[in-house]
Length: 244
Image 1: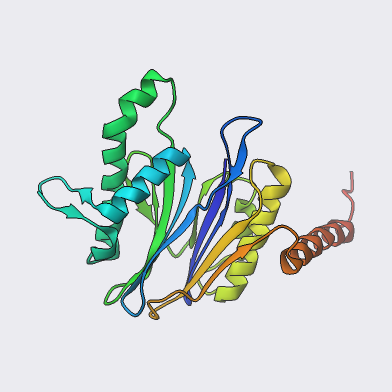
Image 2 (image 1 turned 90 degrees about the vertical axis):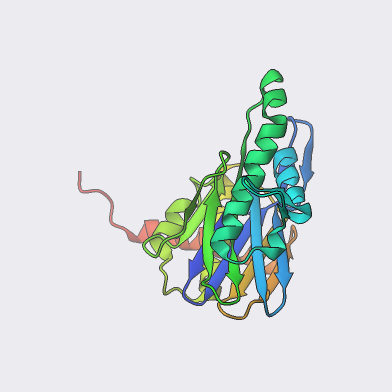
């Protein structure tokens, strides 16, 4: 299990992903699930992954080395995509190619083809966008009414984003709210855990703004978690008891 969130605001994009993965109750490991393709000044693309680790790694490998696109003999790489929409299509093609190659074998092993992706960023000359790519290779685009997308164990963190995030939210406030969302998810599900990788991209800069890993015991995240707990306790104590 994992939790990844992408937040698209007026100033830019925030991507956050945990790193916990497991292959059974006694095999818990740490793997990076937030990946970046950057050509400074020209494009910066972020991809967060959830689901079966072998599937997501295969998809990422195809995006680096080249994806077979229907109707073309060429293999296209993510770094060469002309637009964000075309790049999202390329991610979808890579997912379907992996499904075609190993889907039957997974079925024979009674395993599901389970992988989803958050894909966002900006290519020079085009808009900043954020997409969610499903395990069938289809995708949706983030909208202004709900300027965030989530994959993995999203239900515990979603109420916080619903209440606090708007398109006008400051970029670093969006990052803070995203971290609170992650902390709430970690509190409710032990399958999501530290370290946490995060990425910010300011609109029209075409380069990484912040790339950081939060390790266990980091002072800021520890303080954020405690302050959020204290604020919730103070809020519910300040609300009058039910009159019945």
